[in-house]
Image (cartoon, rainbow, N blue to C red; front, side, top):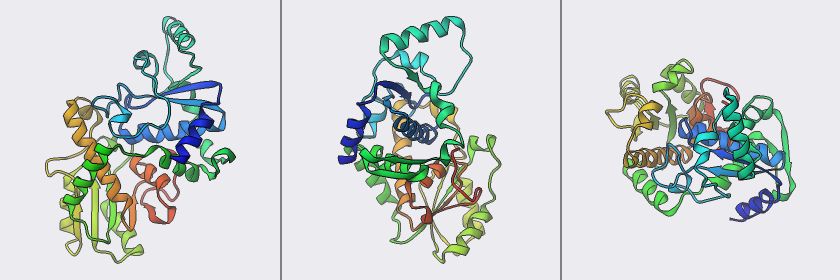
Length: 308
């Protein structure tokens, strides 16, 4: 809470404002990772950061606060759904005029797309940051780790749901975790061969207990067949064969809630493992590269963490 209070005192002192629209179009960790980068950019440039999540695709009632504790001011203006898009896009003259007046009336200088290309680029990740009033300094991964600690606070109901799900897995005290993304991720980049995960694992550990976080149960089946000497654990349902954002966006609120609780339970299991092996080109891999000690995180696709 001390960091939250320090952050809000500093954040609320800035004159210009960005309202970041989270949950507008992509998967949760794509949205969340970019929120963290936007917060960092705003700190560096003394811009007040506000959130808009009322229509978040991962929410079922309130958006961000369906799962997490508040950490900054939240806008409730529904016009953000219409005007506050995630990335730069072509605007008609009429829409430019409408957005101009929307910003003036709302007293907001920046919408998400206004700053997107400033914080979502590889040049931004090369910087060193020093925020003396928050007593944090370091490279982008180190600062983002602090911002994750600031924002990643489950509310009571979410914490209870996650704890119950984790207990059902019956994990041993010591285990390695692996994240394998399939589904619509294959559109962005080629799937990584499963043997590469175990080549890296065998170079780093003799552990035989493996938790598999995946959106495709065929991954679990293949690993059980190819590596019978390992003990595998997973939360992936047997009828799941890939995550597709368009299918998720069409779920009813109760189904969204279930999916998100299971996702967060998987994340906590990944974070509590002795070592995580994944891909930095996935948004979960990017997130864990920021949240965890770099010695604990290994990637099979990129040598170094990067903005994705």
